[in-house]
Image (cartoon, rainbow, N blue to C red):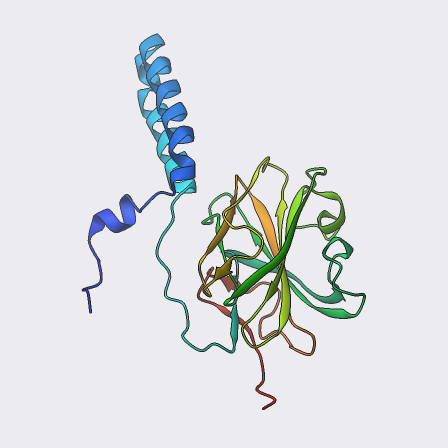
Length: 227
């Protein structure tokens, strides 16, 4: 077993996802130009570039080994727990299931992860508006990317990435038919957003609004073994 990295560099300079490289380079360039025009701007410019770097951080996560658990797909705070049908665009029926919505602020890690091991059965992108992602209407009106997943046990669940008030781009890392492990990287949303997970029929959430979530680690629910 490899030793755990507890060095200062892990926390000050965490690993960054490749998606952020050009944004950090642009922020650094703007900081350099501002410093050339007026040198006191060098510190604020460097701070901005570092903030952009931290936004795209992509830390490792320790995913539970229990195949029956469903984990949070996003870092952030549970904003809504309710019972609604899976979005019609995924053609998964009209029966209500439990939905857990995780709101991500600009301070949270924005790399999203698979809530369970399984196959991406279908995926679709829906353009839309950019309301505050913490509002319930964001599920129907905002830009979003939807995924229908099927676990090896046959359970069906869904994940929806929702762009927020500041976010303007949803990036998907997966394709239809792809098989992924629980906690594997699913996608990323830039600069504040929300991710909803629709639990399998009959599965009850084990989290409450206001609870802090860690993508790929915090258990949202557990599928009961009916065998």
